[in-house]
Image (cartoon, rainbow, N blue to C red):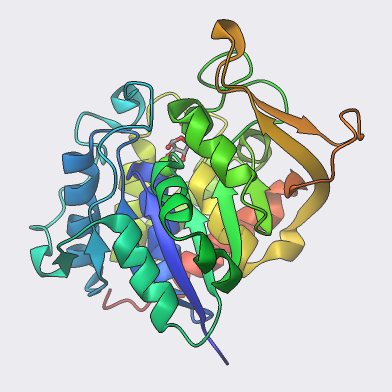
Amino acid sequence: MTKTPLIISTDPGIDDAVAITIALFAKQLDVKLIVPTWGNVSLPKTLTNTLKLLAFLGKTIPVVRGASQPLLRSAISAADVHGESGLAGFAFPAAATTCLQPGLAATAIHEVVAASSEPVTLMQIGPATDFALYFNQYPDDLAHIKELVIMGGAISAGNWGPYAEYNVAGDPEAAQMVFKSGLKIRVAPLELGHQAYVDQTVLKQIEQTGHVGHMIAALLTNLHDLNTNQGVEIYDALAAGILLNPDMYEFKPAFVNIETTHAYTYGASVMDFDHFFKQQPNAEIGVTIHRTDFSNWLLATIAAIPQGH
Ligand code: RIB
Ligand code: CA
């Protein structure tokens, strides 16, 4: 099987940690580079969290520092949800600092794409800052990108404003640049997370799969606000799911435009499924996912991770 080369832009972040773990052990994927960026918590913390996760999982993957700030606005924070460290709930080993390579993220991404014999897939599970900067700096690379999978945006109600979802709201200008890139884009919006919550029974089963499952369950139990009696919403794992098991989803084409001018709608992802704006669709939006399909897939995927790690 030809593995799909993958670059991950991420702001770990508890649900990021789940998505990164899934991607690292997926036999269909070859994770070439991880780019921690500012987001749920500051860049120093997301960088440390990435390196600690790699150490725990026993994976040696190149890591390069991403952006420490959005393009224009000042950074927002979700430490109240993910904990001050960004990975509340589990004591990770020391960071795998040998994975960290010097230089700028855009250059590192370019070097991976230039060296790849296969078109590279991008997965964006945090703010879009780094991919926007990369597209700006290396526009010719777009022809060598297979697709971009995004966890972000909301079809209607947001979680960082009435219409703004956190990743998009964090850097609306960058998100707009990404949606205007012309790339094939598939999106896991906030609504999929609401539909595909993982209930406490499945969380318990995940916990019992081994010490990776134990780590994931410990983190998810500490995902404040999103872990209710009903279950926990693991948004970023839905982006990994698009890459690894797309049949779980129903997708619909939409023209996505990001609001970057007005105060009360700043960061809103306006998704036009009905050609109101007479614009060609620029993304496939995941509109439905069956909760048990996702839970069964997530449990089976984590259970399949080698017990040694
Ligand atoms: O709105 C959910 C998104 O914001 C997820 O990627 C979560 O990790 C946070 O970054
Ligand atoms: Ca994230």
